[in-house]
Every structure is written in C-alpha cells, then in structure tokens.
Image (tube, rainbow, N blue to C red):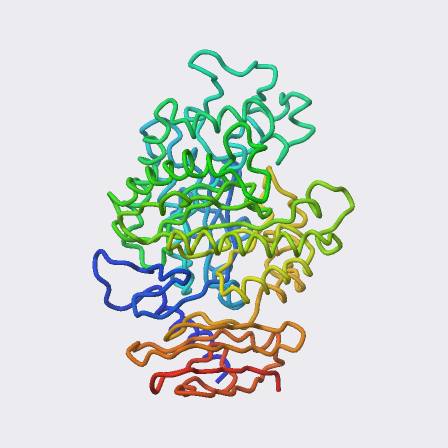
Length: 520
C-alpha cells in the first residue's frame, strides 16, 4: 500500500492547482485577506523554495533559465547536466513543498527594447508545466539584484538601465563597471552584493525608475503584460511578483528606520506598482498580483504603502510579497551568526508584524517570499515557526547554488552539489519539510508544528458548503518513523488511509474543528 501514497499525493494536491473543469478566465487563487483561497473556497497554504537562474550561461544552455532536460532538443541538456527537471519537482513534492517562486529575468525576456524572446518564455512555461504535473504552484517573479550585470547583479536589460542624471549626463564612468567582470573597478569588485547598492550608478538607475524617466514605467508595465498574456490560463500559477527587493530612492537612508519612508512608499513605489498592475489587468483580469515593500523592510522598517489610500488593483486580488533577513548576523558583522545575534529574532518578528499591519490596511494577502539564505538551520526553523504562528505562506531562499553572482553559493542551496540530488542536506530538508495544512475547508484559526516533539495542531471553522477536503501534509518517514496518530474534535472525519502522507478530512457540519497529529 505504501507505494500508492505518492500517487494519492498527486491526486490530492492536484485539486489545488489543476481542477478537471476550469473556466477559460477566472481566479485560480483569490486573496481573502490575509489568506489565499482556491477556486473551491478552501484556504490554501504554501511552503516552497525560490528557483532563480540569474545568469546567461550559453555554455550550460542556461540563458537566465536553469539548464534542463525538460526542454525541446535544441534547448535541452542531458540528465547529468540538468539543474532543474522532473526529478526536482518529485523531490519537492516528497518534501511537502508545494510552490516555487520562479525567476523571470527582464533582460532574458526582453533583451532588446520592444523585442520579446519567445524561446525564453517558452522555457519558463516548460518548467511551470513540469511543476504543475506534480501539484506544485508557481509564483512568477521579476527578479533583480542591483539592477544589472554591470554592477555585479542581474535583472534589467542594458537598454533599460540608465545612470544618467539627465540625458547624456551619466554618473562618472570610473565608478561604472562593465559587463566583463575582469574589468570591474576595484572598488566595485571588492564589495559586490549588497554594497554596490550604495554606489552612485546603482542609486541613479533606481532613481530613474521611480521618477519614471526614459518612459521606464510603460516599458516595465508592457513587459509584465506580455508575461500575463502567456500565463493567465495556467492553472498552477499563484500570481505575479512585480519586482524583487525594490531599492528606495535617494536618499535611501530615510527608509532605514522603524517608521520607514512614507514619502517614498506613497509617492513613488505605490504609483509605480499601480501602473504595473494596470498592464497585468489588461491581460489577466484576476490573477493575484504580489507587490514587495522596499528592500529595507526586510529588516523591520514599516511598509507605508496604502498609508494615504489602499493600493489600487482593478482586479481586487493582490498581496504583499515580503522578505525577512537579519540585518547584522550573517550579513554585515563578520563572525556574528544569526543564531547568536540577539537582534535577529526581534527584527524577524517585527517584520511579520509590520507586514501584517500593511496587509490589513490594503486588504492584501501575505506571502513570505524569501528567508534563509544560510546554513543556520536554527534561524531557518525559527522563521518558519514564525510563519506558521502567523499562518503565512513562505518560499525558502534558495533551491540550488546555481552560480548566484550575488549570493553565498556554498550555503544557500539545499544540496552540496546541485547536479547530485543525493547530496540533499539532511538538516536543511528536516527543517523545511514539516507538517502543515495545504488546504482548509473553512477558515483557519491557528496551526503549528513543534519540530522537537513532531506534534501538529490545526484549528479551523469548518464550512460544510465547501465540497473539497481539508488536506494536511505529513512527512511520515522523515519525522514520524512511518506512523502517526490523529485526533479530531468537532464536525469532521478522517478520509485518508492510516499513516498517509496526505491526511484528508471531510467536514460533517459547521463548527470548530481541532486536528492533532502526534508521533506514535
């Protein structure tokens, strides 16, 4: 019987993202602030990873998308050289990770102005399809770090990266590195990410975006509209992440305080997002749009978007995609770890509170789309626990090392060797794979997984009008030794097999349901 469980999992998770009958246009997922609901009305929860291939490596057949055996012959590689394929989707499913934040690099999508690369978007669609076949949802993410490769980052096309103060008056060339990293000026090469954010050319590139110079808002909006036209009917797409980690306008220092920078948020960032949303809505009337606060919010600054008026979305289906990283431990103080830094748990918890306040003000959903990026499983588990307590969805950073030009490759991925799936780091897998509800037929009140005792509890108000089951992922082999006990109090009954990795319950009436899973 045990061999049936993966198939059962595919069938159960499949109803989250691929119903048998679906309208041509209609919300795949809908924000019911702060929750996300599927088209059956269930509150759904996502645990997953980021998968962002940031570089152009034609020698690996990875042009801002991961080399894969899943592509057509002219684009594919053999299994031994494949960085992301069906094996990875199966592994994620086995770990109970049901979503991927999949990176789209604007430069790969639109290398020349007004010229979109169909092959590039086809490859993104190939990966989305493979993930969907394993019941895994995809958040499409316009990813950038430090705007462009000239600054040892990635993201924007060269033609959209402007360092001019006014046309034809660029920031002095001595401070601008070229695309050839061997020629990067010493002051840039020495610091890299994230310190290059503080250099004049990078700050000017972002200032030009926020001030809508060179028609950048329309260009960015049109790029997103192009993507939304392609993916609006893709059933496993959980939405569009508009811009990764926006760097605030000069002077950025005004944002580095608890109260944040309301002028930037309300007068620059919010109007920019509202412009982009109109482009997406022209193509996809009701898919979820996810907008990110400025990057300083990662460390607990206030998110002031919507302070004057809620963010405007014609589709009324939007959410906040936020990140949390400890400011000092693991980043700016050598030798100080996130587990040892007393500021880390305080700052991380404060970030959750700040974003919850912004979500309530704007009627937004919540999705923690980045955390981790380290080998410190204590900190990773602490943030995952905070997300559970807050009933917030999450993506861990990152799935693989993937030659990240801005990261710390030996530490961020979940493998010792990206091309060897047997090199999965067990401690990382243990902390990311946890018991949690993937779908709740009603309104959740609380859930939590105790990693030390393996005890899981879920409380929700059952809605018997929802015709689909409550689904709870249980990592049976990893955390329960192959067997677990279930206790249900209230109007619901267990409908899955004993010790199944997907525990299902059917509501038998209205009222409070409490589910407890314990190790035998």
